[in-house]
Image (cartoon, rainbow, N blue to C red):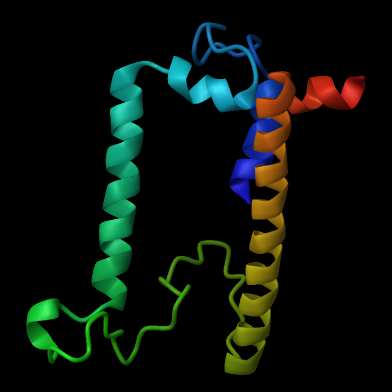
Length: 135
């Protein structure tokens, strides 16, 4: 869902921010390649760290499971619940949690379709989404 917002915000503030000295320009699909390679590597390392933490929280170590149960989830792990709730939005009731989780999945799927549409449009005419909307 953040990718969809990122397309719009990245193109809206293009060359108006001091973060990259106004050097990042063009459609959103080209902007990440313009970032300093050190920052690019740092971004990759942060994503890898987040994924390793998620895997360690959710899955049983391969050495502790039988050969016929690869990818076994921990008994106490609920997919999507990593305990990160700084605003206290997660419902205490289990049924409400699963209802909220379903809504979040549906919104995420819709956002993936939107981001795919943004990418396809930018690949077709190599213009930003906001630029396409203004025409």
